[in-house]
Image (cartoon, rainbow, N blue to C red; front, top):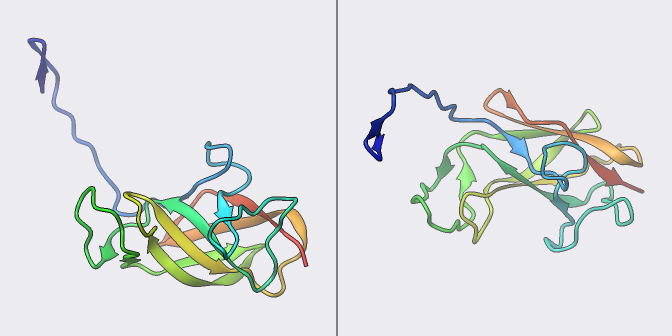
Length: 145
């Protein structure tokens, strides 16, 4: 590449097809997840925790290819990931209801997951997302009976 008469050295950059990451409230990939209640509007917080058997919406990136294919820059219509996602909540396998692109958004993934019935009540229940053998950053959500 040449800019302003200066040419840079060529570099090879390797990209991974899958690199899951869950978005967090602090925007640094740590702590409380950016997660909504099943209404898709209300945030899950310590003051308004998720409940066992509730479907919550996690927001993520790096979930890979989707079907049907989505044109670059096109808003999603809820396209599903080609690779199945799995989620552990408090170490318990959770049922993933949907894994794909967030409808109406460009470049945003979402995972709709059911809080397992045996999940303990705590303000910082651990959550981990995996897809294609790759594991996300560990995050936390608040759960109450």
